Length: 201
Image 1 (cartoon, rainbow, N blue to C red):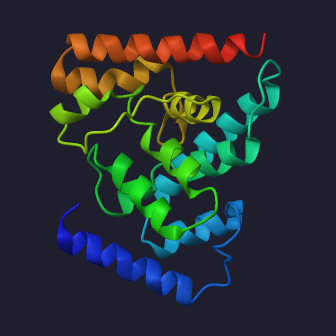
Image 2 (cartoon, rainbow, N blue to C red):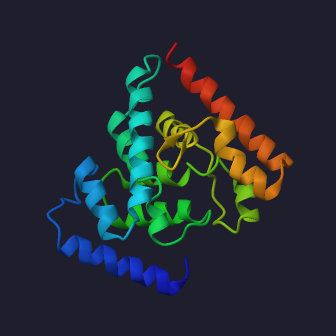
């Protein structure tokens, strides 16, 4: 995000806080508030529809997990807002940009929510791999169950259509070929799937 984009998003957040009835001091926004935030920040409708589809999948998986404790509200709102950074850019940078936007919104659980948003990229990107994509040098590999649920559920949707993991990566493969990095990403997605299903069955 360049300086002009950063100033623009800060102005939009300031306007949002001044002209909405949302209580930004609480833990998380409601579903309706999250949608209002995204619309006011200029997120396209098709992206919001994708996020709604991912939210439904992540929520359903979360409700069925019995072997570990899950913060279902964090999963729902994290899935719903995971692509918020696309109101600025549609590149890989939308992950860290989205995390920065969430932190600026200032909800009490913004740190946890920001990590969910940042760590949905592909099937997780290490700090070393982030450098190749010109992303801020952070760890983008999902670590908590909430981060993993959102990342995995995102891999099961293309737009708002349900797809397989292989189908979801097909666009990347068509563009770059089935290189070692993408093989590793598909493998990471399948490990996520095994881990999540293992918490259910």
